[in-house]
Image (cartoon, rainbow, N blue to C red; front, side, top):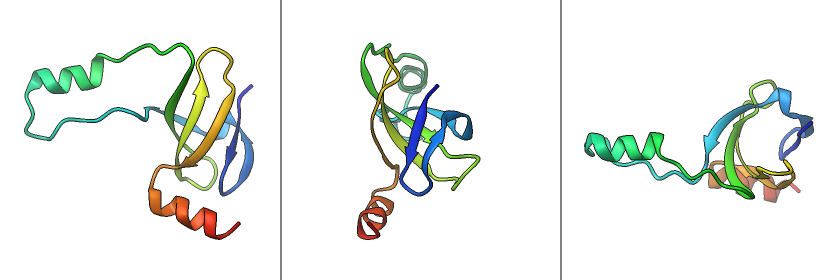
Length: 94
């Protein structure tokens, strides 16, 4: 069972969240070639170890989060809001 420590709601079960995908993808511009879009969407590294992922707290505060999670043990190292300005709000309210 994965427990995610939401910066807004506290520790919650992963069933409250929806997996969004790899948080490190740099998508090409809208006018990029089909090849560039194909590579960005379908060709990704299968990381063994810690990776950054996006998760949506769909059954909670509805915020998008970046979660640093091990693909081997599911250990979570860090959780932060996707938007940098929201991270500042969280830090100022501690």
